[in-house]
Amino acid sequence: MKDLQELGTEDLREHVAAELARTRRRSAQLTDAVDDEDLVKQHSPLMSPLVWDLAHVGSQEELWLVRDVGGREPVRPDIDDLYDAFQHRRADRPELPLLGPTEARQYLSTVRDKVFDLLDETPMEGRRLVDRAFAFGMIVQHEQQHDETMLATHQLRDGPPALDAEPPPPGETALPSEVYVPAGHFTMGTSTEAWALDNERPAHEVHVEAFHLDTTPVTNAEFARFIDAGGYHDPRWWSEAGQRYRHKASLEAPRFWIRDGGRWMRSRFGHVEEVPCDEPVVHVSFYEAEAYAAWAGKRLPTEQEWEKAARFDPATGRSRRYPWGDEDPTPDHANLGQSHLQPAPAGAYPLGEAPCGARQLIGDVWEWTSSDFLPYPGFAAFPYREYSEVFFGADHKVLRGGSFGTDRAACRGTFRNWDFPIRRQIFAGFRCARTPIPDER
Ligand SMILES: [Fe+2]
Image (cartoon, rainbow, N blue to C red; front, side, top):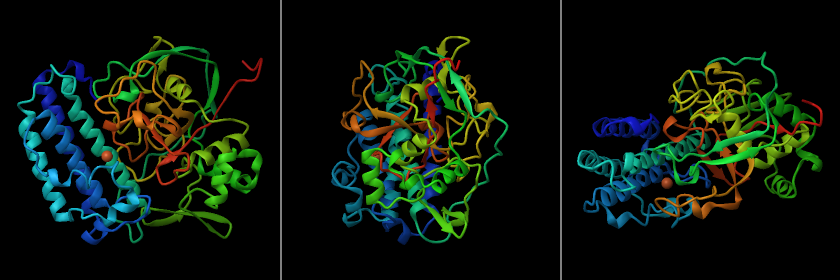
């Protein structure tokens, strides 16, 4: 987001209104792309029907903005329970008496009208929930996160392509394979980013030992070499939990890859095409990423290493908001926001390069780290425990950097995503790190 600290109240309201509208256009694009039958259907037990995500977005907006921030009468108190993500598992959601597509769209627009109405009257200070329009920013991010989830549902859906986008910009092959980040302290997390969520806070000093990091995410060609070398079937590369999952799920290749004679094909939003060699691998679980890294003689980076590579500027000693600096992402910096329906080839986006020389840390693919999702020292749940706190622990691994399906409003250098290590339908890939061998440097 813009440096919201500097905006006056009217400019802040204008910014909020523009972000809400921009985000709603994306939700509409994702749901108008298919017919009603498709909207209510469950395309995979891993996902909600699209129409559930749609009404859930409206329900959260009603709870936080209409009722809490605005203090207005509830719009549909009768449906609170249906759209409470903690009440019903995704697999069970199609059986609920959900709003139909027309009703859901109507509900969203009723809620949104009330929000635009109350936005003009809401003071942007005096209460933490509205300070610098935080609750509005939280709702924008929430809707964008569901848009990415809906994009993942599109990827799981059968049938002809429903979405369209330009191909991404070209990559660059002549880059060094690794960058080096010397040992030292850096500031991790943030206490100043206005719309940062509770788990990104507070800013704190962390010492990180020297490490090497892959300049770009691991590509499909590199990952295919791991498969060809028998990597999926070699227990040396797999953790115990990873091996159990590999057996149970019969893993042989990234999700959506199809063997066609001597080559790999993939399905991508309804297109079947040859797997592009130079593109970052996507749709791999944490366990597959971890096994590849072991096979390559490396490891996954810790979350601390990832963030230091992405934010630390040795010239000034401070941490940037993004790898390229403090300015908000533009299409020249990173592959974000569904502008392209695939990752860009490795080495793309030279203007998005971090001070250490690493590229594509923001956008393209979420990157698995080796770290469990844990609170930072001094963490305080805000505005509710269910946002982050209930997910802390060893069950979830941290992912960083956002994907081609992540909007710029829901992605920054400090942003932390988390998921189960078995997840493959998300737009996740990885890059490797390694500890320097003695006297290497
Ligand atoms: Fe949600």
